[in-house]
Amino acid sequence: MTNILQLNNVRKSFGAVVVADDLTFDLPEGQALGIIGPNGAGKTSMFNLITGMLSADSGQITFDGADITRTSAAKRCRAGLARSFQVPQPFSGMTVFENALVAATQAAGLDGKPADDYCLDVIEQTGLMAKANVPAGKLTLLERKRLELTRALCAKPKLLLLDEIAGGLTEAECHSLVETITNIHKSGVSIVWIEHVVHALLAVVDRLIVIDFGKKIAEGEPTAIMKSAEVQEIYLGIEADA
Image (cartoon, rainbow, N blue to C red; front, top):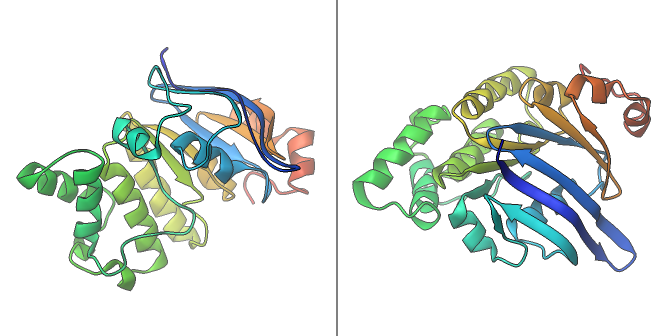
């Protein structure tokens, strides 16, 4: 199976603080990979390294068969790497549709009616059609999370990076969002998902990686990983279905 993403001995530090400690893993095309770890473990820094918001000190990042270690964030996005942010960052004064259109035109390279039609299809998929003409600044938290997902999908990603997209949601909202992400995964989009809401993560991902202090400490089948004594110690007793 072809790998859509590979990290080989990727390292990044800020003085004495190491946020990526020889990180090595791969993601086969079409797979969903979950990333867990305590606060400050280096998970979001890893996303920043993958997307080009941070530059690696050493190591190699390969995406869709190409070495992107020194490629700009903009070029990575246009090549098919898209992400959501832990704290939604929409253009607050623009509508849901306008936010989506920015991604479709600037990242996916669409224009005119094809761009409009594609955005409307994604907005329907993410459950925001009723809010398409509402300014992003007036959306609820769940709706802003869905808009983060919408904007990422409108970039036509080959790989979708989700950063704690279920955080802060009610149980019902979380289940609804998981259903949407499951459908996206079933459509063939590869996913890497950082999440503290572990039961949401386990409902979608095929594999799980645990990171602590920037270092990978466990990798494998999600249920088996969550039963690991080392993982349970890191999470101070948090269980997968908590």
